[in-house]
Image (cartoon, rainbow, N blue to C red; front, side, top):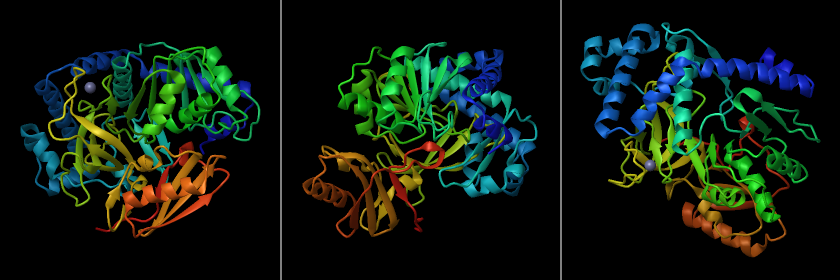
Length: 465
Ligand SMILES: [Zn+2]
């Protein structure tokens, strides 16, 4: 925890409000300046552009990124020179040069960040990510990258019908109020963004009526943040037949895998559509959902590669590891970065009718360690389908510590019976193979993981192929 965070944590509520708003004001000025406006226009135009034009834009961005790291990043320039790459070869065919670059692992990035940084850019912000594996990572971020990131994020909002300056609620893993606090407020208002930050650490049945009352008086146009948190509220609303006194325009979820059961529960409670969005604090390129419900690769924010279990270029329909090259982190550049997330590719020739011609994928399947693995079936993602139609399960977590054993933690309610248990085990075996031993563990609660995120699946061994 940094000194600033410590001061914030130990301050009374009103001081927290002031500190957050001073920071909010500084962030606001830094994010939404004239450069930002220029980037926003540029990226709105690209969303509607022809395939040729958007690939041409991507090529130019890639070329200038590679030229910059060739000249100003010790790490990348030594790798490039070792391969005989020159400024001229970058200018001639940046896509070809990129192919020759080695993949950058998380560990390499964490351990060599001082060599990786681009000496041509000033640091405007230092980010600390705790990482899902718990190992901290430092990010140096420059001003231009902040502006471009916010431009692309705001474009996403425009696409889903959200204009600037609307009232919004965010559920994020930030420690906004003391985790031990038993009384409202469980939120802080950021005046400059018109954003009410709600805590994800206080969503108990006792506190939920307070959250709902506050939402009803605040009437957000947009809700965003962790799907697991918005799902908990939605489930409570639906279970108790609560009528909200507002209908938001959109709900945008990010940072965790969005499951189909969460989407339907949230859409029912709030009577509005859920939009999924992928980005990361490390500054990866964006993947955003459009009005047709398809996930578009924002190829003007980076270059995406998909690697299958065999380490080869993935085929349509396959689950694949994401390897990203980012145009929105110029200070700590990501070139062919193995970010540890997986996606399912679209079927051959699938396109979207929303008007955006950027490529689509089928699903965001989660963190690499959110995916189970068995001898019989290989990678198995999207385990949410195993719960379909089953009653009596409030929360559940799948933990795989060995290839042939699975522990299922369940927080049950009164509808959970042995028949439900049997059906769940059979559903899981259908997906994971008959040779896996499944143990059901009934528990009172399942604690949140790093950054307040809820982990539905944990696989704690690595797969050597
Ligand atoms: Zn679309």
